[in-house]
Image (tube, rainbow, N blue to C red):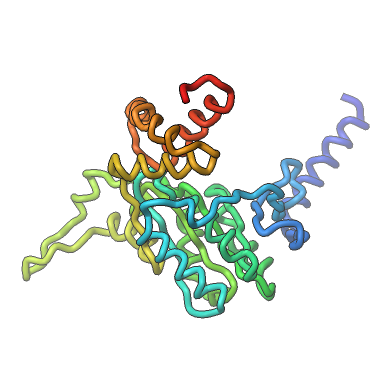
Length: 296
């Protein structure tokens, strides 16, 4: 190896060590006027992190969400309090898949965007960046909901403790203009195992006390001030949702009635009568009607 090549290798190694000691680049503010929804992103080249405007955000409305009236009322009221600068809670939405948890958060954005609400989607892998995100939003006039979709953790994941601290555990006060809305299929966000029960103990008075493992799992979900649970739909509810989406695609009442049997078969094949399955069926059925492949 030539002396020049050896020099270049040493120089590259030195630069790598120096870069590791430098503070991370400060995230740049996005163009807030480009969108009402943003995603937290990392540049593959190591050039820092940034908020990416979502130029084609979901247009779903609160009226599109059927048979989740109690859940819709709770989330809408909490969000209304937030945009009006009244006390409001971080929210955990849990329950059956495809029942409208994520859609409800997106619908709230569309409902309150004109009132200054903004949505920032953060992947689970990036939850450690929550302090940086909150610092970036501090002092802004808008009201921000940080959205963590399909949230769940395995044992030992770093994002778990980062989220705990962001919710209620840091020496710094929570930012007045930021809330966290998270969805999950798990009530306590972590897998529950039979071995966890071994940590329970009996007190002298007969009371049952949870062990440290269970306490740790419950502690994160308890930091969300508002819990909203979603449940699987009954058959009639599922068919109502199918009818709503078919009507939105321009199907007539006779066409909607004729689609009922096909809608039930579709749900049976999917093993679920969820709102997501109803919407997928409606798209398929309405598309075939428009293309002349389904019976009128």
